[in-house]
Image (tube, rainbow, N blue to C red; front, side, top):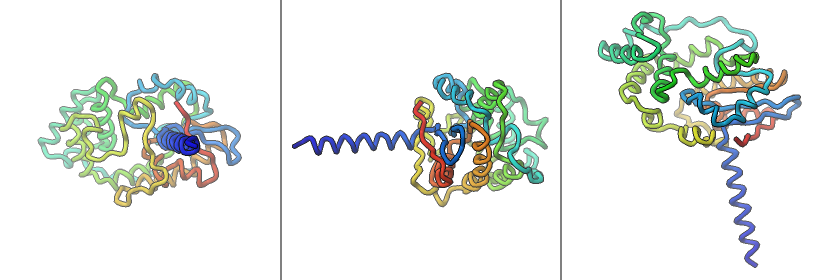
Length: 282
């Protein structure tokens, strides 16, 4: 008589475990909807170490077997390119106090990138923030995880494409605000600690990701209304480009993990278009 409740409990726990796996995977297989070959969607953390790939050889095997790769930036553009928007970024020395400027300069001078002073008028502040986060997160590696993954695919002579276009990137940076970016750069340099210890509220579990390539994605939830909607807008612009390429062949698509999350993320957007998007166990 007890088999019924025990079996029900077992099935409930099993379904919960499967659901957890489904929502925590950061690698997803795209199939169906008439495409001839499956493609794969991978959520990266920009500051992760490239050594992470050595821990999950199946991930690189999947990437190597793809016909081509797609990243946020880097490679050939997909579709028509609108006229680039000129950068409105002011010179660096106008964004920092003299003390802040000296601190930022010392930080980069001590890195392989060198002093910011020769590049005061043309340095890209957004890229500086990303580089600083990478240096702090991984003391032995000073390149973005995405860039290193891109280099691996390029070394395999795979055609590589990018999703962003210059005016989209400029709009994102402008929406963030150059003064805010400058203050954030000083803040993370002052803290000199991994992001998980710096950001008061972060939706990425760095430890879970680095050990298992998993992270809760909250696919059934709506994005926080108070959050910046730049990610939502970029996802919507990326979707037709991704659809175009997956119809042409097998793609390995690597974008920031935040672009997979929530109902407005790429996983749910592709499902809404009729594709089967399922987690890949690593």
